Image (tube, rainbow, N blue to C red; front, top):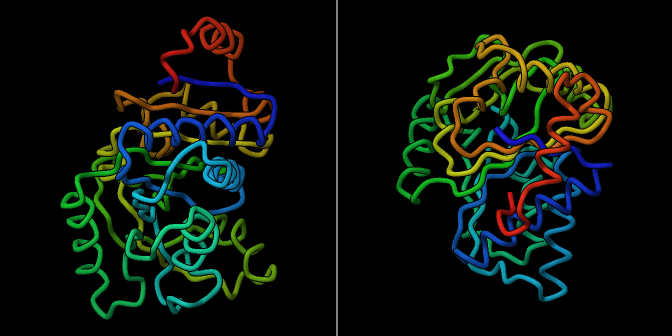
Length: 261
């Protein structure tokens, strides 16, 4: 696992956007796995700016969701389908046909989960999956004690996650759904490159446990320790609990530029 400590969220967004741009230059039809929430916005904004400036052609790219609320209409402004279309697909100038996501409105949710898991494999797999991390260490909506071998499935959100997400629903936790479809940890680990972005002191404990703690289902993000190409990008605040922070800074400073992320 590579840990990169950056000054702030804008620097993290630029670094990851350039990694995505490099991927698209090598593989124009790459499948990009995207996360939602406020943390990854600088990534999408930086990548869209590169597209507008002609620095990268994203017209052949494909985009897939990490997770989706169960029961929210597809057109609801806070459904993750709507969020990804608004924050990623449209700014990159992609057709909606380039977008893949699970059906959170399906009558048979378990079947929809299996269908999505299968669709990712049939699409050739995710080339780069962007992840966030919850204050409790979750990735996607794999809450603490999720199986490290889990596949795409329905999950019940913890109270803390619903509290954290209430800000997207006018601060009203009662509007936040109780259930979601999420790629499982086993599904996530099949992506060729995992990139986790964390910013702010509120994420510092979770980052330290995921990076330096033991591999444990109690901290789902610790599963990144199993991946052959996992990158953790954190700002100074989110890195503040890392015991090996100085080592991570030194190793990245000495890294040959041609290696990229």
